[in-house]
Each structure stands twice: as structure tokens, then as C-alpha cells.
Amino acid sequence: MLSLRKTKSAFGLDFQEMPDPRAPGPGEVMVAVENVGICGSDVHAYEWSEGYGFMSSRLPVTMGHEFSGRVVAAGAKAELAIGSRVTINPGVTCGVCAACRRDDARNCTARDSIGLTRDGGFAKHVTIPDRNCLVLPATVDMEVGALTEPLGVSCEAVLTGEVRLGDTVLIMGPGTIGQGIALMARAAGAGRVLMAGRADAPRFDVMRALGFDELIDIADAPLREQVLDRTSGAPVDVVLEATGHPTSISAGMSVLKKSGVIVAVGIHAEPVSFNLTDFVRNRHQLRASHGTSSYTFTRVLNLLGRDPESYRPMITHRMPLERGLYGFELARQRVASKVMLQP
Picture 1 (cartoon, rainbow, N blue to C red):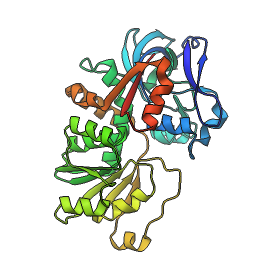
Picture 2 (cartoon, rainbow, N blue to C red):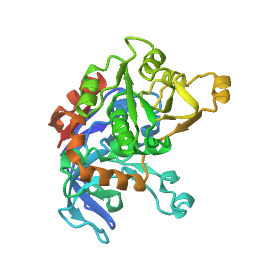
Picture 3 (cartoon, rainbow, N blue to C red):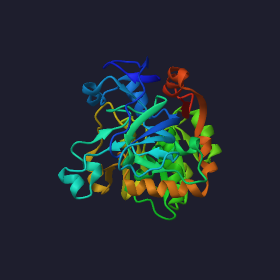
Picture 4 (cartoon, one colour):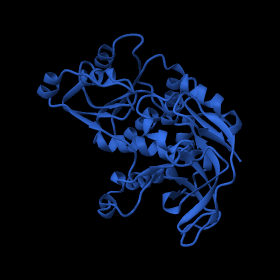
């Protein structure tokens, strides 16, 4: 089967013809992949950005961790029936370390990641633990179902920021995660959602299609000036950063209310620097959000099941796996929002 793989610790990906995955063992299933999204993390790995060296010892690996498909084979003790429509939680845990034993699977000391440190969904079939499969609601098709993982990351960020009813929220970065954060902030009851980007016209178009129109292009004027102009000088309640640019942290703090929360979600290749005295005097809370808990996945699937079509505008490009490198370049150049590959 054709697979899109990271083969070396350098720029690029390679197509390789691989054998079909092994038959599922106990507690495992084989999934026939129908839709798999190109994630920002995938693009970072493609570029071999700083912070992805953890993959080196696992190469070569078939990438892809945002996917949906059907169960086509099941091993002994697997609980999913053949034909089940699923998406996945990419975090594979050991189940025996101290963190797993205290039901803290996100901090598993032997955690593996489907599509980054073990073979993932940029292929026709993949064998994974059945406990990593999430059954899709009947109302959610395979394409929208493949958005579950990035929406989970976005939902986790909103929960970390404690967005409350009526809050004014500033999101920095209109990529897929930023779009998801906007949707989840709205679902949490935010009164206003401001989105900031730099020369991001295609992704701003997606934001409008999702129902958001308070868009700020910092190529036109400084962030602080534009935000305070829109809020009549009032600082925002919560800032959620999904840019991957360290300067966004201090820029976000410049418009954050006293005791407000700023959540870093982006993966940054450089250290961050900000005025610590202002940070202390304003009692700002800088928090980090990464990945998703199983509880959050349940919330996201419930939301998707209620109104799946409201999420579809996030997907701007669809193409066969064979055109995957073209899809990566579209995502890398910020021409595309979510690119769906269809093995």
C-alpha cells in the first residue's frame, strides 16, 4: 500500500510502497482510512522544525494522526465490531505506569503517538489499539469526523483558559487550531470572539464561513491598537495563542485584563521573552495546553453530533493521498486551511 512517511531527520516526506499492516493482535483493530487531515504538527515535522527531534529514534514512520475510517479486522478481546465508523485519539498509553494507574493517561511515561512515533493514517490501512478508537455519532460523516482530533486540541485550550459566559476572547492565529478554538469558545458562551492573524486572507475567509467577522490583520496596524479600538479601550478576558510565534505571547498580554488568562497552544521553535514585572503586577496567568483528554474528546463528539455541517467550512481542500506532498505545500504556504487526504 502507498504510505506517506517521514524517513529522515531533515526536510521532507517520502512516498513508499509498504506491506499491509500486520493483523490485529489482542485488543487491536485494523482501520481502513477514509479521510486524514494534514495537521500543523505534520507540517512542522515535514519542515523538520525545532522541537520535533523526538521523532528521530522512531524513523521511518508513516505520519497522519487526524483520521477517520472503518474497522475492517479485530483481534481477540477487541470491543469494536467490524464495520464500526471511528476516528482516533492518537495518544497510545502503556496502562501500567504510575500515571496510568492513577487514571492520568495524558502523563503516561511510555506514551506513544500514532502518526508521529508509530505508524499512522497516511496509508490505506493502519493497525492500532481499539481503546484509541472513538465511535462517530450517526450524524457525523467520515470527512467531518476526521476533524475530531484538532477540535479536541482546540476544546482543551478553551477549557484550560476557563472561557466563561459573556467573555471577550482574543485568538491569535487563524489556522485549524485557531478556528477550532473560536468554535469552542463560542460553544462555551463567549460574548465576543476576536481573531488576529497576519496576511491570512484565505483563512480569514474560512473564519467568515464559520460565522466570525471580528478579524484583525496585524499587517495593517499593531495588535494592541486594533483590539482596543474594537473594544472601546477595554482589555480582553482571555487570550488563546495558536501562532507558533513567541512574540505573540507578549503581544497578547498587552491587551489582557488584570488577572486574565493567556493560553499558549502553538508549538514554538524559539524561546519566549516578556516583561516579567508587568506580568507579575498584572497578575496574568500564562498557561499551556497540549493534546486532549478522553473527557474532552467526548465533549467534542457530542458537539459534532448536534450540528456537523457547521464545522465543514474548516475543510478547504480534498485530494487523494497520491497528491499529499502538494497538500503539504498548500498547508505550509497558508493557502489552505484543512487539507483532507483520502487514501
